[in-house]
Image 1 (cartoon, rainbow, N blue to C red):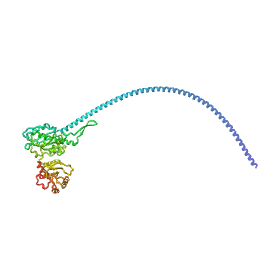
Image 2 (tube, rainbow, N blue to C red):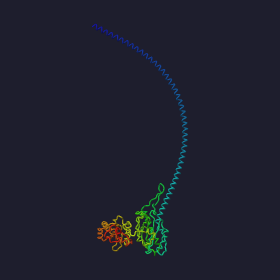
Image 3 (tube, one colour):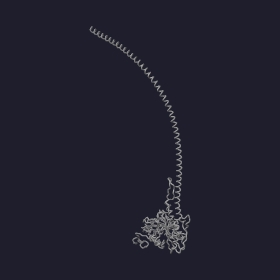
Image 4 (cartoon, helix red, strand yellow):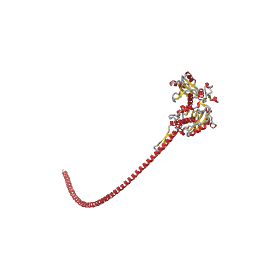
Length: 513
């Protein structure tokens, strides 16, 4: 126990010594810290004093620098103000010079623009004057060309007014030919010539008028107009007008030649004039150039004396085709010919030996080789020569009816329908039946079927059962043409019916051979 108590006291003594040692160290540390703090404070004070000195020196230098800077700034500002003053002075001078230059340039520009405007106005006036002069020149040129074209048309329309009047004293027709030719040639139309043949026994003359072609006399253009772009442009004459002008021109040539011939030759020597207006053109079928008759007619003096050629209302084409019953080309502008006089007809005229080739026509006309219009003319002339009147051609879509004529007979007269068929084979029953129906629709007195062929047996039975129907077949047609028109014709068929074998008017090719 005592040992334990001693040990505890030792431990307590150790603890007290350790505590005293710790206290001493703490005091020593506190003294060291206090000394260090004092030293640090002294160092801080020294540093503060040095910093204050440094700050004062820096402040002094800063103030010196500020003074220098202010001096420099003042100098700079002075220089700047001087430079600005100088710049403003220079700017004012530049502006003044610029304004002066701009005023001079503006004045020069105004002067230039004024000169340009004046030049443009002068150029426009000159261009307007030139354009007006050009337009006036074009207008006059167009008017001149139009007048030239119109003068050509007036010359075409004035053919009858320029006819010559003269009397020839001669003992016979043949003796009068030189004087008649000289009289007609003195005032012949440009490009026109004449040939005259005499038939003293029958007191007839054959006058052949050689006329220029359609493009030689009919102007292609009707007027001329001024184009906007300059110059003149022709206005084409309508095709229908060109055709009508040439058709009337040929008719006027025929009427003038007839009138001049009858006026020049005494009535005791001349009763009838045969006239043929021919055009020298190329035949499309052969490519050979030769005469192509455009108008043919046989005119008595009394009929010609009944026509007033000076009447302004005279229609020359209608006069030639209707009053004189001439054969006139339906397409004269294309130089489509009509049937010429045959050599059988011309043999009665005294044809000089050097002109026989010019008047060489076929001795007999083959009806199958005739043009449709010529065949229609032939049928028309036949019916008019047989005493029927008022030949009227119907429209092309009128059930195949070609014409309507009037029979002046007291008991059997009335309206007669004519249907012409230029066939090389038989006319079938349907055609005859259709003609019968048209006759009933039009309330016609009769209907006549004219054909270069024959009627088939079925159609013949319809005709035999209807007395108002009549058929004129090939042989009878040839006989009637020769009897009433004095023209020998034929129809050449490859095959003919048996009832034609005895007819001399029509032969087949095999029979001719």
